[in-house]
Length: 228
Image (cartoon, rainbow, N blue to C red):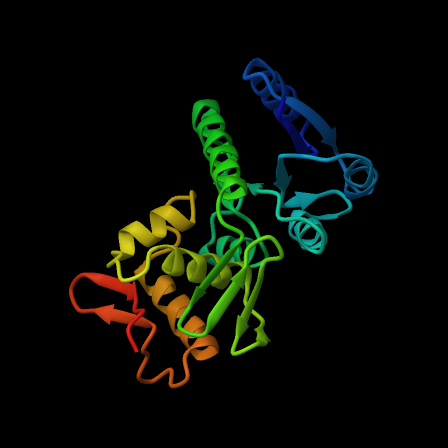
């Protein structure tokens, strides 16, 4: 049985989400403060973590950073804020999805089911990707170029994995946005994606101004080029 971890301080929301999640056949552990969450996180193993961003004694963003020090468990943020900068921050520090309050329960359940399926597929997949001098250690979440480790944000890492898992395949901006982030693509738009790709190129390309790996296919999208 899948175990979910919820960090949320709104008691009425806790009751509704807990009832719905248990009805889906999942177990759920609940913390209302980051102090409670610290204890539960150390004592348990979870398949999905759901974090409220604004808490009485801290931030869901900070707790996500702590999780990412030791775990790749899927993380979903719950928040009343829908600012693009907040959403990008959440994704960059390791979040996998982002849902804005108020939300429909059916949409919430659909999101967590999608994250759990994605996590299962990832666990069953290969553990290493190699192409064009770039090596990704999937279980460790580490990237190497020519034997030297490359530091990437969570979003840059996801983007690189997507490209290398689909070599020589043109991916449209809409496909990339939809496959990388389950949150509404209206928040992470084409301009934001362009920024991510430019930042990623500066880290993995020999000459970012003339990229050979992440190439732009005019009018269609981007692709990971395996040819030298």
